[in-house]
Amino acid sequence: MFNHILVPVDGSETAQIAVVKASALAKAFGSQVTVIYVIDPYPFTGVGTDFAYGQAEYLNAATALANEAIQLAKQAFVDAGVKVDSSVIEAHTAWRGIVEAGDSLQADLIVMGSHGRNALEKLVLGSVAQAVLSHTKLPVLVVRDDKHNKSA
Image 1 (cartoon, helix red, strand yellow):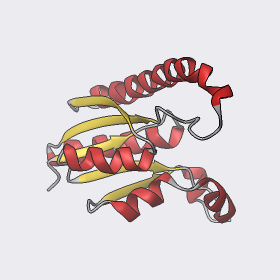
Image 2 (cartoon, one colour; image 1 turned 135 degrees about the vertical axis):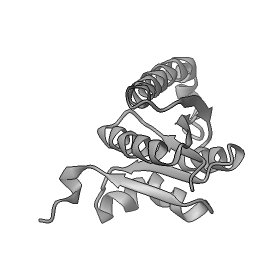
Image 3 (tube, helix red, strand yellow; image 1 turned 45 degrees about the horizontal axis):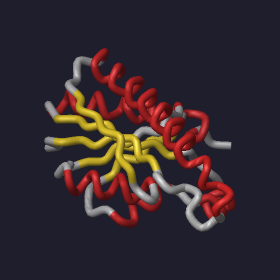
C-alpha cells in the first residue's frame, strides 16, 4: 500500500514519535523510508546587513542539528529493522521542503509530528504540519505526542 514513506524530522520528541509510527508502517508494508531535515539557508533575509555576518555560523549550527536529528531517527529505524535513507534539504520554508521532497522522491505517505500548538500560537508562528496538509497531494499522517492527546 505504501511503497515509500517520507519522514521529516526536527529533533523534537514529537518527531521521534512519528519515527516510531513510521517504522511500524514500514515494517507492515515493506516500505522504503526516507528521513529528511529541512534547513532554511537564508533565515535572516530581509532583516538587514547586520545579520549577514552570522550566516556561516547559522548554517554550521543548523547543519549540526540536522545531522544529529537525522542520526537519531536513522538509529530508531535501524533498531526496528527498517532500511532507511536520509537527506538534509535546504528550502526557504520547512513545509515547502517537505512537500517538494515528497514529490521528488515519489513518496506515497508523509508521516510527521505536530507540536500541538494552540490557535494563537498557530496564528503567530504558523504550523508546518498544517501547511504540508494544505499544499501536498500525498496522504499525511500527523502524529502528536501523548501530552497533547489527553483530554482536559
